[in-house]
Image (cartoon, rainbow, N blue to C red; front, side, top):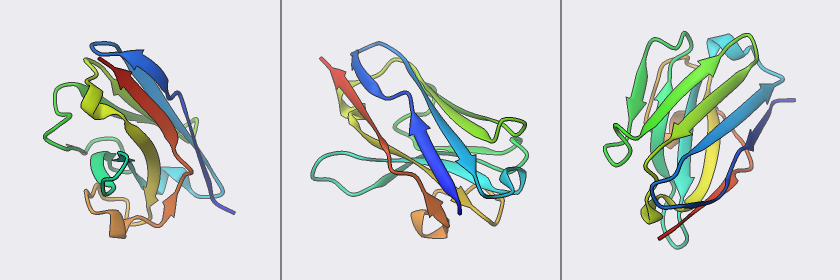
Length: 124
């Protein structure tokens, strides 16, 4: 059974930082691309960042480029999202997702497994 478990969310002031983690089990982690998506209240889920199976390829939404960094540790079956210079508009539930193709993608429908999400709140 595949499980993706996010952690690291919380409340932070604008300008602050958080590091999200997603621990994966039940899959061959080093063959999957891993992505982060978010959903703010009343809005659709949106792409944040993705990293290919080897870690060599990354994609970012324009809204987070230069502030967020995605990385992975295949020895720990874990993907990370370092979020710096946080803004109130970054407030959302952040979801981790796994794509069996192994190639980085910004399209949610290409992902096979999803975590339950972790809440991030940025106060102004």
